[in-house]
Length: 133
Image (cartoon, rainbow, N blue to C red; front, side, top):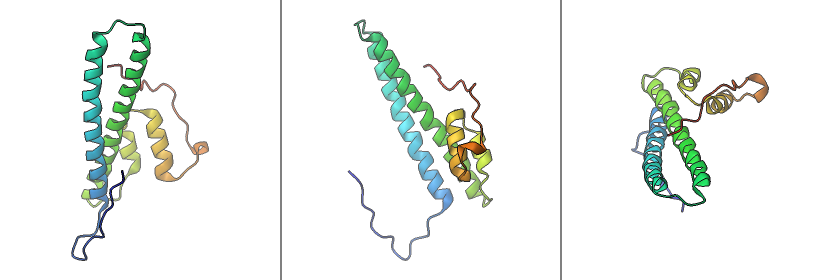
């Protein structure tokens, strides 16, 4: 279900990059918090389960861990960009991307920020992205 926004009143302040990036950062933080709670609950259930699907469920928990890490990385990126925008500095997307611990996401965001093709950057393969809970 999509929310519909009413047009902003003429007296309302114009949107800002700092506000937009801060809002994205906060939403990513909230989603990561929910994922962490879900992960804790699922881990508790898995610790008390000895059925035949245990190995498959462990794999699914690894996917949940990957989502949690991705949300944390998006929070980091958005927070860094918001801080720079609040300081009224040109946003240094290289610096914001450098703070991301997931190299594959950093690579994709760098491509997006600079509107470049994959031929312009190389992805380091030794990334250690999976942070097994």
